[in-house]
Image (tube, rainbow, N blue to C red; front, side, top):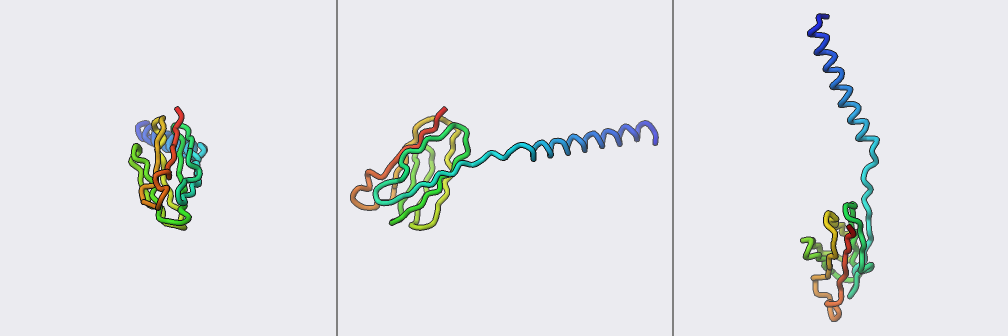
Length: 124
């Protein structure tokens, strides 16, 4: 094998080894665990109605309506979902900025509907 060919082969081996090491490092890092918070919606309340999160964490709310097609609306985060009675509705909450974000039911569910709200606090 001549010198030029040897350099090309060694370079290819080194590049392949670097790719393999990078793939192994990616596998060794633990996957970012997703935090799941179960929320129940029933006339005229969410439970829990106050949710505190850390900035940057991965969070999904699993919302279940008990008695009616409720709504879940976080206007300042541009999130909205209908919650039919029974099945779980998953909503991913962005936590890239700290603050207090109000949520509410936006499907009229009877007298007391105006009190069906809560807040999500994302700590810095």
